[in-house]
Length: 156
Image (cartoon, rainbow, N blue to C red):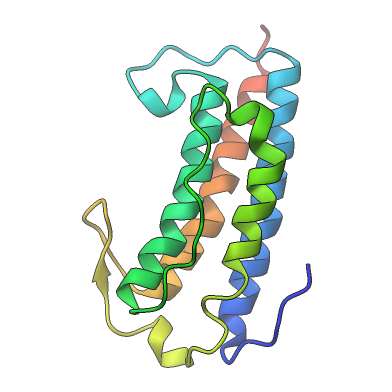
């Protein structure tokens, strides 16, 4: 991944880690789809199908960066909304490249202090500083990769 220099290298590290984990999640999701993984029954619409899991993770990645830009009064990062769950499987590769490209630049010129102060309320009503939201964005695809890998280990 080629990134410009960041004023705060901690942000650069998290953007790189986010890309790595999003790519790993996409690869894991494709393996789950290839084996026609059955998901456990749930009322959670984000786990209604493999496509809805993919949409959830991709949508969240977009949402994290748009939230950060909103809170820091940065320009809209121009990340297109993700394809709907019924077509996302066919469009994931192109959309993922778009998403990850748009993640590279919004935070380049920010001083370190902006990542820690102030604290903002997230869309799900939990308080985060920008650094914590970036860490959350890195962990989100890791958690879903872990879940899919665990399910693929089960006897079908």
